[in-house]
Length: 171
Image (cartoon, rainbow, N blue to C red; front, side, top):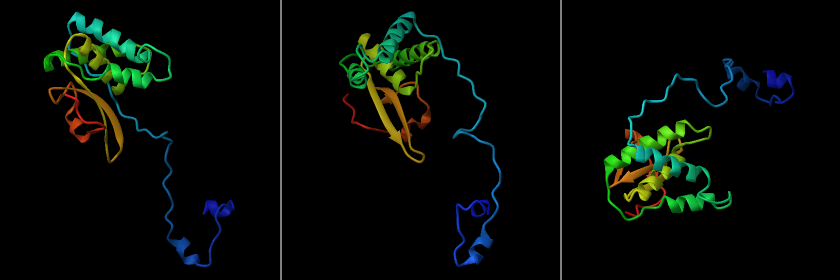
């Protein structure tokens, strides 16, 4: 009724329809989010080599793959491509923990795409075979990036099966 009083809406010929409008419940602003208590999970320790390789790979990703901003996504994606090497899921999990721990110390945005690209690059530099994936899940629509070794997701939760990769595996 406030919209009618303000002149934004006008009543039509059928005044009975307005009688069915229920008054709304006032709410506080949420800016599209909901507050929930959360904390970062403890990550297991990794070998020193994974911290070194993971940190360098993460800095490479955050730096746009050794180049300017133009074409950074393409360059980084090319660096993270699957390469020949040994598949070792345990090494990949250790690399993932190292990259995630290194990302916590940086005053920059480090989300799933940056982490997955850095993990793929670090594994590639160490001679391991890993596949960089990025995909979509629906209802609600959300995007995610992850790493697979031997067809198994590395250091991901069980809901990873909700995501459909944008491209087929190159393994």
